[in-house]
Length: 629
Image (tube, rainbow, N blue to C red; front, side, top):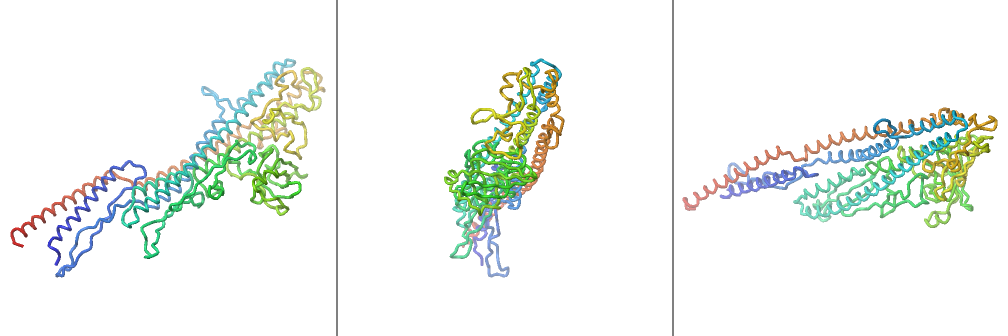
């Protein structure tokens, strides 16, 4: 037979359960606007019945309140994290693609922005005036000024892109610091969660919410995968109540392993570690502090804001130096590399650092002082010979070179298949080099004569400034285009940043060559006529199969396509995120109406349990006071 006071104890259990429900509901309502908070519910089960040894067998004993648990679906968490990484990548690409478009902008009207087309039109108009006004050097002065404006446009554009590359580089450092901070916080939370849950009963709901929110933040920066395993007690073979929570990033590299966490470091490149001549100084390579291994952000499996930033900073359209070692001379410390890619056969497209660069041979890094270039007779391949820097290689513990490197892969930098900042800078350099070389060939023809009748055969109009000594390069008209040394004053040394007009011409307009001796006088500007034709005649100069004056059209086309792609993918992943987030909230979010209903239900249950206790008190009072028990 059950205890006489069983009903009172059963009602008390109901009172406790209802009170727990009300407290949990109050907690949910309080956190209705808290970011990352997961709705909690009280997990209740009917308590075990007891035998009564009567005809009806057993009687219930009320309710047991097990725990207040989070309502959360891991499936949607994983979906959210995967999509958030893609969204983060295209958020960054969208932002910087818009800046690229603004740099290349050329508009007329109220908010006019003078770009390449406007400046080049003025430049051509000045050339036209020069060709039709004989004997007046003031028109030559005007043309030289417009040529200077063209150079300044490229100088400014080049420096803008370089400044943007520095900004992206700084943001990479910020993101790496954020990853390190999140890793440390997650490891700390793992310890706190296990301390609370070690008894196998308690659940650290708020701490788990905080940890998941950190993973949300991390997933925007880099792709993540998480795993939580129960730790089995070796003595009992059962779950100990403690779990091992691990986080992996960037294609499966461990960031957090329970209480342990790893840190990333940003190592700035020294000047002799450059891989692209156009790169800003001090670009960061991201590696693990414990092993020194590279994070591998350029891998196809990597995603997130960090990937977007690296692709914008290093994106070279997949056109990095690569080839096979054809010859090794250990005695003279030289390595020859044969290349066949078309962009490596044209020195106007060269991005190699002129001195003090880094080359990777068979996966090992070496440093070189200088290089030379030799195009094959058929023009289908070329050989680059690098003079290694033995002192720097010894200092950096590089392995001695040997003939075993022959036929091994050689590369400088990474082939990043995205049109980022290096791509646009290379395109500018290519146009400047081609235009300067083509212009100078026409300008310095045999018999070229200025206003005074002085001979300017072999003279140049466009050149560049050596940033080391401040002197202008002495380009040679009609020089050999099949063989170069990095020490030569070739057009490959010219870039959009150092592009300018020859000083002697800037200082004295009368020294500008306008005609040849054969034309017999300054009134016949045959050189100017040839130069005017350069802008539209693809036989004299072509840029990506287009006319010289179509430079901006080509580059704006690239920028527009990249911006459109970034905008499109950003919109797609943003919509997907909203859908997943909506599903997430529908499960784990706090709904005011639902909580109001729960509050009424728990209140009613609490009142009924209280009423039941009051009724039983009267019963016991009657039983004890009036029956003489």
